[in-house]
Amino acid sequence: MSVSSTAPRPVALPSAKGFDAWLALALVACVAASVRAIWFTPVDAMLGAAQKIFYVHVPAAIIGLYLACGLLFVSSIMYLWIKDERLDRMAESAAEVGLVFMGIVLITGPVWARTSWGTWWVWEARITSTLFLWLLVLGYLVLRGGVESPENRARLSAVMGTLAALLVPFIHLTVKLFRGMHPEPVVLAPEKPKMPPEMLSTFGLSMGAFLLLFIALLRLRYRWAAVRDARAALEAA
Amino acid sequence: MILPDLTMRLATVATAMVDAVQDSSAVAYVPKASGPPDSSPYMWLGYAITFAAYGGYIVLLLRRMARARRP
Image (cartoon, each protein chain N blue to C red):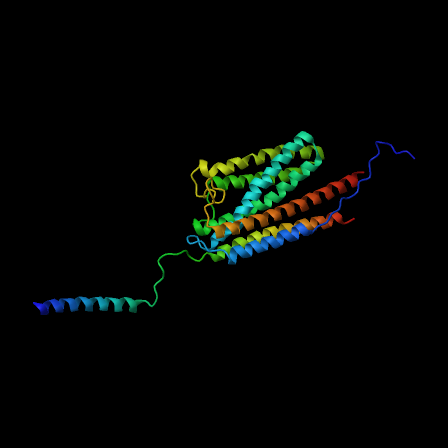
């Protein structure tokens, strides 16, 4: 029996495991890092216990802005060039997980600012441009939900994702270009980290733990997108 | 000459002692002039928000995945 080449190929759903070892490991690491930060790391002499927000705020900022948006940028550019749907899925996943990380930056920042600056919010360059980036990435995800055709959706969102991620270098430079209240980089300072070793080691642990969490969430989000697309293809067939 | 001198010294010492007694009788304890105020509620709030946000997103992803696997 011959099969026509134009007939739709049967599509199988990819394996869709939810909770896995990566996620479990990441959660344990995040709890361990937070326990160390809260109970086994010295309290800052000037800012008090609230300074310990640093150990969740800064990793979320580095991962959300530089890693997630970097991934969004590279995947979007590569999609426009190669047109591989896996790149579109990666861009979509990086944007959504990055939105969560950046959201945490935008919420924990004001909590910390309330104690150190005496106000919840200041419309200064670093904070305002981070809020704009968060809104742009949110717009990227809303745009994806509003376009029916998969090809158009992938192409338009790749353009928007690329443009949104271009804001990241500007955000990085805001503390140098504009006078504001947000401090300059403490860990990624040009000469050396401006922290005592016991605080720096807690920060390193925290950074590693939240990086693991980012990878675990990205894998899970990507797998879900793959299952969703396969299911859509099955229903269309 | 010696007597007025001694009287003056005794008067100075007595005045200092009375001042000290008045100071310590006004308040029992004196707060430390320096040091940060207690900001631990803000630390707890920051960590609670962080874990609630990550936890909520994990639950959302697991529910999406479970729904996608349903036939």
